[in-house]
Image (cartoon, rainbow, N blue to C red; front, top):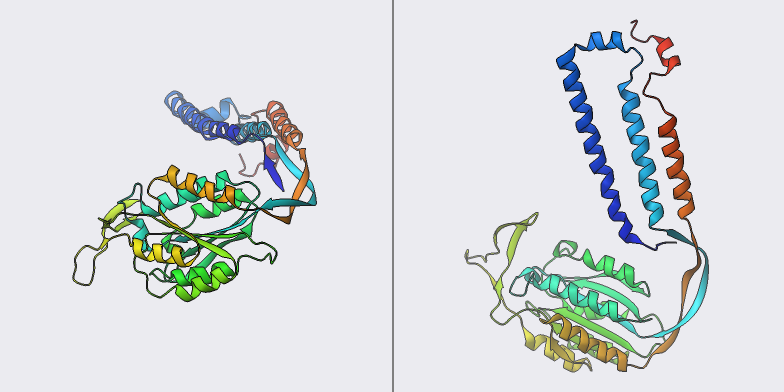
Length: 343
């Protein structure tokens, strides 16, 4: 398992393509100036040992060496052993609505991105709590099993989109049923389910699923994203607006948030409903709930004894720079002796 201590230094890798562009421009300029002075056959006779390939190889060797030195600045570390540690926390599952209505832009930048912002900021506030993520639309799917790896949770969260589900709709009941299977610690008494949705297009009664979840000690909170006025659902191709979703009559569909469904689920789930259009207020409210919750002890496995590995990258970087310094731009003699083209 690797860790990067100073990832900000990766920005210097942008020097590599910049230097490569400069080299190619200089190489092209030299060739152009040579053609103005004399043709290629004459230059071949005047400097028979000059090698264009060697010039390119030297540049690539230099850039590879520079890349290794830049990576060494980030101080990569590697965990050398696994150890089991005891932590205290609660189990939290986020059920994120990724139906197409969540693409409406009545909340900037859109409902789905607002929901992701809220979940990300909540994760940043967590301590040793365990996290799981479910996505749902017409069906519910596990995006991330319950884990203590908060970095992985945020990474998987960013990939969530309507394209990840096979059918559209808002199957909240399926999301609740799937969430009950996430809590794999029988001794964990503090279990939280946060459903983030606009509540629209809710197709089935979720009362039985909520009753079962509550029976298993899960507290269900709902967070509404959207406005009562609503907005159209944009259809985009690579970020470019192509139009808006229309119904069978050819009229633009206006999606509106349905708070009643979300309030009913929260009331039956021994939790609360709150509007999530203001990110910080929502995050603060969730943080207050989790801080007051009683923490349970559980075991988790993690890598430990991380050791610095930067010296390997410095060594490789210096090796390539030395090769660059020793490499001449002359043709290799044994290749010349081959006389492949009978010249």
